[in-house]
Every structure is written in C-alpha cells, then in structure tokens.
Length: 269
Image (cartoon, rainbow, N blue to C red):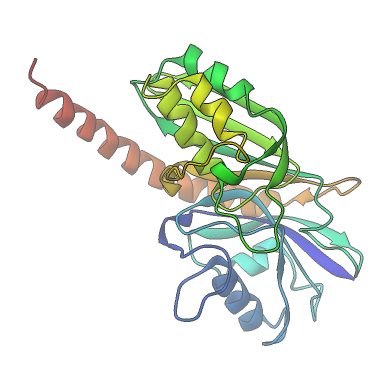
C-alpha cells in the first residue's frame, strides 16, 4: 500500500516543488526528511499532485509514496525532520496504483493581489470570460507535447480592502497559467486594457501576445480534489504548525503596518 499526505509549504525560499540539482526544493527537502527517518529508501519515488514554481506556496499539495514502515509514515513523525517552512498535516492510505497527479479531478488556486487601482466591477467582468473550455496559449508557458486546452469551472474575485482574492478552479493548469490570468485581470481592472483585448487573447489562432506572469509571492495551491479519497487530519501537527505560524504572522503583520505608515508619510499631493 501507498501513503498519501497533504503537505503545505511557504514557497518563498524554494526553487519550486520539483527536484533540481544544487537547488533547495520542496521535493528535495521532503525526500531528505523521509530518508533520514527510514520511511523510504534513498532512491524511492515521491509523487506530487503537480508542481509549483519558485516562490509559489501550497496549502493542499498532495504527495504519495510507498513507505518502508507505515508506523513512521505519520505527519507528526515526518515533521520532526522537515524545515519550518514545510509540513505534513493529513494522511490517507491509498492503493499501489494511486497517482496523485493523474487521479486528481481538479485543483484550486488562490492569488492574493494587492491592487488598489483595480476597479472590482471591471475585473469581475473580465473573470467571466475565462469560464469554460479555452485555448490558453496566450496565458501560459506551453511545454512541448502539452495541449493548451483547459477547462476553468470557477474564477471568483472578492475584494478585501486593497486586496483581491482571485480563486481559480480547473481540471488542470498549465505552467504560469494562473499568474498570467491575474496579469490580464489586473490590466483590465486598472483600465490599462479593455475586455475586447481579453477576448482576443482567448482566441490565440487569431491573435498572439505575450504577457508576463504576476509575481509568484501571491499565489498558493489551495487544494487538490479526488473522488472517494478522504484524508484524516492530524490534530497534533495542525496545532503545532498553527502556533508556529501565529508567531510569524504577528511579526510580519507588524512590519506590514510599519511599511504602510512609512508609505503614507512619503505621499505628497
């Protein structure tokens, strides 16, 4: 039997989720911890539900592997060998043929955008254009042998002060797809471009234009969905991580307020 884990990480100091020689990655740190505990052997495979780029975070990434010892394959044990910006918090026993990427029915991402210049109504109208099945060639970095066709079921925008929460659910995603969608919505929401421009971008056979992806710091993988797969949350690990994050939140929130006051003090009409 395999074990599937839900893991979360702050991606700021990672060069992405996928192993890369000489670089700090989520896969590299996770495998290092699992090997040190004797949960897997040195050459064992750890499968991910999908990759995240450098600087991108995850709350609900799913990984799977075949453990040497099921007793050791528990979040609280695994976390003892993981860095503070990476942790496991839920577990499910799965069959040997479970594939966290291929068996997923969909994925949800959230982008938190600071954009006080964006008009909510404009961005919301733009978001409606992405719903459905489209060729996202203008909104992704297309890798060889991959179809640019994807189906977006949900794209919701909610405003919280100067922040926008942009939630996207799709069957699967292309490289940089969410971040480029965010760029498009920002440009339309700020009045830099119009809705007709977005419509043209969604017809790459007729119109091509390269647009940059939004910065990675605002993006995180919220969850990966499966049919008939239930994870059991480990209370101990979640409570411990909550306490750790609370300390970081307090300090970063304080610094953010100081930045706000300094910014406001430098403003001259």
